[in-house]
Length: 210
Image 1 (cartoon, rainbow, N blue to C red):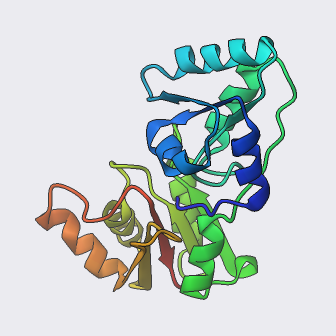
Image 2: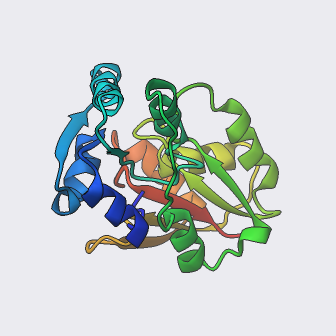
């Protein structure tokens, strides 16, 4: 989600003999890569990670790159790397898009409920947390492309009885084409009926003001 590249992270990528990650992420750091890039998608992820592990087992140095906070939206990919590679894995976080979004929306973290829907598996409990805390706290939400995007999340909150709130959709934070849409829950929810698809990028953070 637009995570800024820390200096130590850039150095680790440049020094690696092999760099693995999803194609869009590897392309994002392509200029930093001096070694061999290994790109994957959801379908061939296990095979590519296995090839990466073989290179590491053979003595190569490696770096796995992900876009998003390794403690939130990126933790599942990180876990797969750790379970596949028979070697210690050092995590170098960047500047999270969540930190940037909290700054843009002026939502102090101690007064904010954060929920990531950008994961595989059930998310009903996460949605209930949002329903419970909307209006009581600020909300920061990582949508799930493309079935739980800002419009559908807003609709769910209003259907649960929440009153209308100011909302911001922060897209591609820290990128050159960063965009912030200042709107409301009702305006977002209205779009769920008029559009078959979301108007927002998969690199989005939804902020709902208290």
